Image (tube, rainbow, N blue to C red; front, side):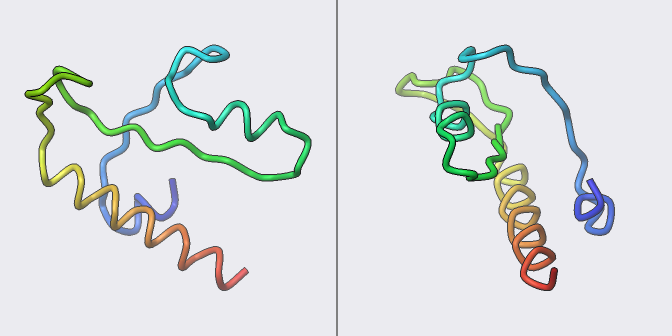
Length: 76
């Protein structure tokens, strides 16, 4: 949240229950390997179809947010 606020990147929150989202994040986080996980979801339409749409600005913001999180954690 802090990195997004610093970079003026708007965030949307969603709550997932168990394996309702098709990634391996839940499996990895429950593996007992002490691997912290965070999932990024990008707003899009017509997922997994030949004509999936998303806003390129959202992609750039996500990349900048991820870079900011990594940079901040490198200094901890």
